[in-house]
Length: 281
Ligand code: CAA
Image (cartoon, rainbow, N blue to C red; front, side):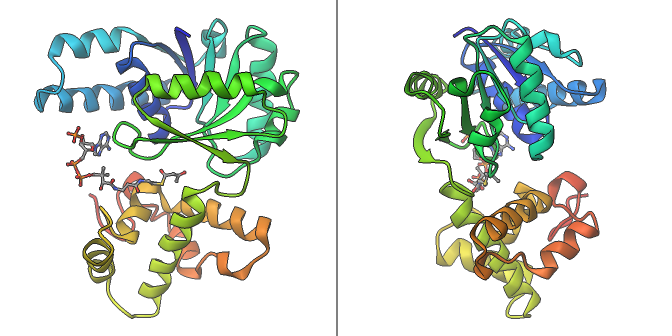
């Protein structure tokens, strides 16, 4: 595998692009708007600049990495890719339409992976004529720093596709873990209810924002507390995952806390909007 297409240039997409390019892959990225293409490239450049400053790579390395990345708003830029990684909006109808388009556009042997954190791989695969070549590759935020990729096999994903993606993940210096298709897979099913519980503790007035986060950092040795983590992930993403867990399992233990809903309604989504439980402005 040499050429990888990435769809979406948000937090996850940009991180995935960076990791691929750093590990020698040619990356073609596509976003729907030119500003998104530009923002994605700017995020990658900014992160590589930080690495140059920390003397992890040289300025020449940075230029070489960036020379492997090309972006466009035209989806045909990904048509020769050996693998496509989709990191667009978490919406089943939008994903199905996109996968149908990719299925018609790409080579017959191209594997198309989705970075979905909660949606059914089997349902996405069923919208295409290559259900054996559709797989979940779930990265974690911040992508360049997080070592795990959950590899999600749908009902129709072939063993060959799984093995290819496991090898690719290792070539990115990440650790793959096989997970069955299930709401939230492993990490989000544990992590996001913890964020939701942190929000409930805040709403109950048991402790303030700093108190809750300090307690979990020092009392459970977590690198960041649940509210800071919610801000990092995006509170809209946390809400969407809780909604999926709640509707799929029908268990009230997954009920999104009303304060989480309120934060999303106020567009206080965390780092991406400059304010969440903390102020980033
Ligand atoms: N982009 C790229 N690299 C980043 C980064 C970013 N936004 N933030 C931190 N890093 C890198 C740094 O460059 C640094 O790398 P080096 O050690 O190679 O220099 C490393 O991460 C550590 O960073 P810092 O020393 O600056 O800061 P830290 O020690 O406080 O770590 C953290 C920051 C890695 C984010 C750490 O706080 C952490 O691990 N937090 C938990 C993150 C987490 O749980 N993520 C999962 C979210 S769930 C998810 O993503 C799935 C989903 O579907 C919602």
